[in-house]
Amino acid sequence: MSETKICIYPGCERPAVPADPRGGPQPAFCDLEEHNALTAHQERQRLAKEGSTEEKEEASG
Ligand SMILES: [Zn+2]
Image 1 (tube, helix red, strand yellow):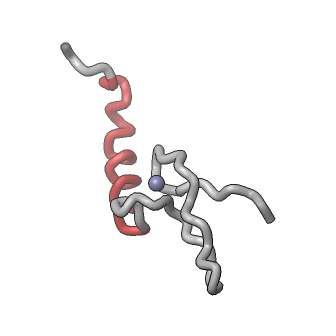
Image 2 (image 1 turned 180 degrees about the horizontal axis):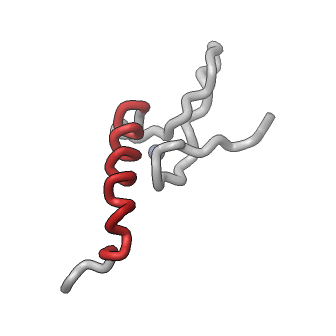
């Protein structure tokens, strides 16, 4: 059971914070405060919206 869990926040590849030694499930997110179930959900919504305009990925400038 030494598998490293990765933060499930879209685009985040940081390792998830380790489970609390006192017990409980391991969090699915890394130690960044802004990475949590709510922001991950919002980010997915945002990405889903932007998915249709993926071709315009290049920024001008
Ligand atoms: Zn993260």
